[in-house]
View 1 (spheres, one colour):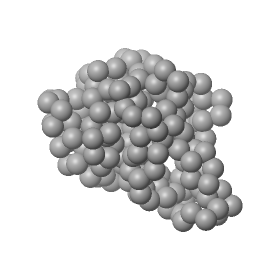
View 2 (cartoon, rainbow, N blue to C red; view 1 turned 45 degrees about the vertical axis):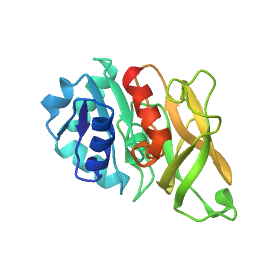
View 3 (tube, helix red, strand yellow; view 1 turned 90 degrees about the vertical axis):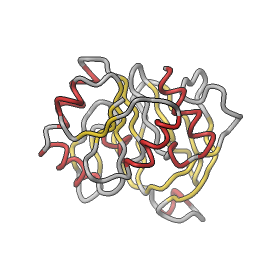
Length: 203
């Protein structure tokens, strides 16, 4: 399993979670390693624009896209990693994304979250989509840890979308063929997160 390192995420917590599950892992910023990977994890925190600039500069953007769309490599995007898989993001201006998921990313607004604060931080329950692979074996409406100000807009994206409510319903996780991103951090979500990562490995 290959964890993509663009210097904008805590890869250590992701590695620890997968190693706890017994997975062989490597962290890399090498496009060749990504192209040959059997499983890819794309974590991330911070600015959408800055992350995409790093992916372009390192040629990791082409490697991830080729792996997903041509090689059929299984990919888990985490938090910003989920958003980067989309067509575009609006943080620091409109920025093209990897385009693997036909959806765009938009900021939460105060009317959206009502009494909530932006960013959305903390544990919240998720309503799994019918037939979800990621949430198999988990309790009804399991809790996961979120920290984000932006959301994927899944309308028209196909696949299945599991939801969280934070004033409005938003996409907490998405599943389509070999693509499995989550807006929350499974590596920081205790037993529920470990079960979800195990489900991803076995998908």
